[in-house]
Length: 313
Image (tube, rainbow, N blue to C red; front, top):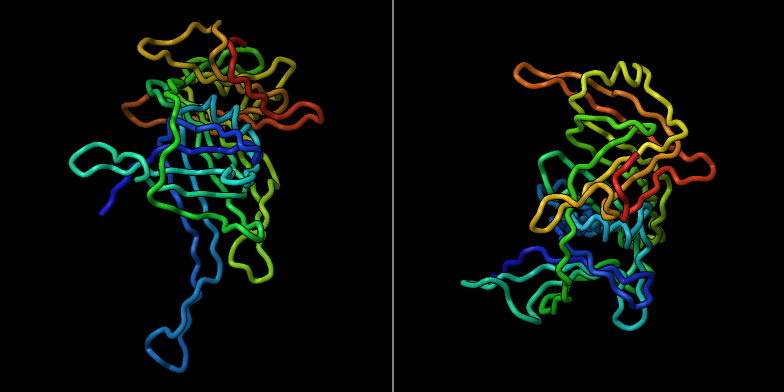
């Protein structure tokens, strides 16, 4: 029997035939989303009917190519749509392994195709002492009246991936222009709530759209003075933007200089941050978690992303 490992994801931009490969895939999972209706009757010990009542497929994947992902899909997600001919909204691949060798050749692999739907970011996480900060996504396929939301084919040829060397780790954190020191990790929950709808007895969903976007950051530090610094009720975002960074790693080296415009910044113009917990256990230092909740001020997006940023307050 055949065996595979994960490969890449291709996003066709707005169905116009131009494709962007999402490289550095670290995880991928396809859930066909089959829900059965199972029924017994007439006092029989066995069920006498089963059938598919709904099918709500989902694809999730994670990548360490965070700058490429953010530049391609954006902070608020991307509509995926079938173009003309063979140009499809999104494709995900499995790389067939060769028995007694490494990988199979052309026309040997597995391709999942999603013609229409929505892809949204879910989370970014970074930890001190660990490379490979990762961004995760969820893909919501929908039925357009003609094309099935998802199809899977074997015997496919993989697209060529350009070797992508981008890799990021934990970077500096600044609240209201002042650096928070001793940061151990941070994570971003994009907080995107997707509304989906099916109708008319069709097993697949026929609509997907973003209902709410409520991002939040969680930062962990060993600085035990944060409750005093920010107050037990927290601090409002002031005139100087708060900034949270991912620091780029250098292939075959260490880190680019802070002044190099190669890092990723997340700037918050309006919001509130507070210490959500502080504690520890015997034999380990006390850690504090800080929650930053960006909000919309009527003009500026809650979180402004820059994938070509220098690290500075």
